[in-house]
Length: 132
Image 1 (tube, rainbow, N blue to C red):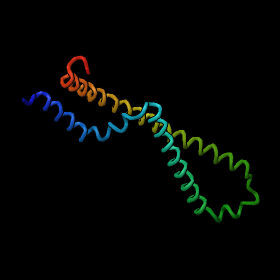
Image 2 (tube, one colour):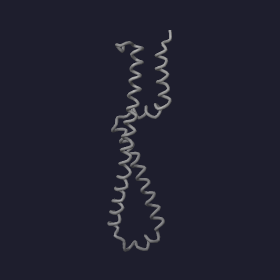
Image 3 (spheres, one colour):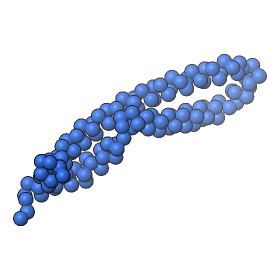
Image 4 (spheres, rainbow, N blue to C red):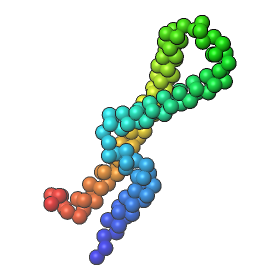
């Protein structure tokens, strides 16, 4: 005979897997540090590319000014300033990424913990209290 409580629990689990589970189940496959590191690495690459593109556009727009003053320019000082700006830019870009990734991971873990507890209850109904 069909156990209606098992059917309800299985339906609820299937609904979770099709809804919020699509977003949270892939996150649950990682450890916290691995997930955050992966997000920081992606942001580092994207931030570096954005910095290079914006720097290139600025250099292109001011190309005439750069060519006029190229012989009078303190190249080491200029590179140092650009390096400092890059470090500040990346810090301002990576800190929110870290906060966002940590929040997203915590939210996913909280959601997955309830999912896992329901799965444990269903498992106990199938296999009994021993968990054969």
